[in-house]
Length: 540
Image (cartoon, rainbow, N blue to C red):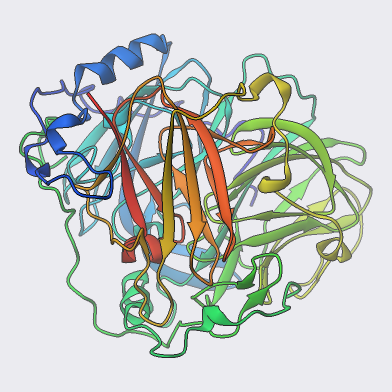
């Protein structure tokens, strides 16, 4: 059953992917006309477009290396979640998660996505600092990939680490459209015997008629005066056909939307889920299933090793609305990386990851059979996998290792390894992003404004930029920056996704060295699609 082994690689035996990269067309984003206002926005003519010559010049500086070629097909399919549960969903092929893509830092990744879905789609390469026209955001960096169409992604992969990919079209990510992207280090300093990729997910699609679009429609009605995020709580335990090219001059600036779905399935709105670690409200959606590597706890994936083996775990939270607290019964983790970048190694009993975050950890395994349990934080449900190095009965779905209540470590507590620490310096520009909205009206936004791709916050290449996330809501938000890695304060970890707790402010710094138009958004897929997204734009 083990789909994720030391080197599960897609490259061998696959057909050549498409006809190569499309030539970028000249032209400006003419559909982006908007006026300057008192919010720091500038006219669109002032911004570099994804097809600007500066994008190609920056890519050349990365010195693209040997090409690794892959083919990916987005399809409607039936997925086996284990325990006799099958669902109809959308996925990359017939696997959940999709089969991993594995390359080495310095390679050029060339992947053709064929869209066999009934809706337009895309692929966003979460966490990578890549060329802007490959970032996979329809209406901003590329056109929709329409049904029956395909798109050739091609870019240099310059930094090793644990990443993943998913659509940036509506709430498609909360289906089965996601997979790991592992970038190996040609000078890997860590020593270990095995490597396992652990993908965490919350699942609703195809269960009793539910779909993510129907869940969004239900949430969007709001809760009237019942803003369940206001309660505290103790919790805690618990391109179109024929390739239309990358030219931006005629791009429609809104992505294709599905018609509003009719209500389907039972209500999925979650009330009363609380977590001290998340500052109160734990989430909006009550999922019927929580998964590790696409399996329910009733028929979990089993990993095998020998007693004394040192295992590297690459843990990815691909969930839509759920933070996970993960522990391995009878063991402690040594945390080595977050969001692809090394940290000062730290011991932990359990790890907390918001949606979009990744953590790497080492563990030396004992003799026996042990539960790898991922608690849906504040929701009192779990996902499960099994480690077997010897005899013993398999753990049951209800198991709760005591380590879950031990020392819990998250990315915001970690310090960057010296080799990747951002040099100290005063910011040249500070941009404040107030996170606004509530469950009452489901009006999530940034600075009180719902997402508009024509609305940009300016930065200039070469600047040190400080982003100040001010959470004016009563709910936590995992905020994600595209195309860059920032540094947390006081030598904190290098990251691209961070939890911002309710009522708190998080300041992060990055060097503006990757020109283009880059999204910033909450990685709760329902908050983002409701409006909690905006754009950083590099000035010409």
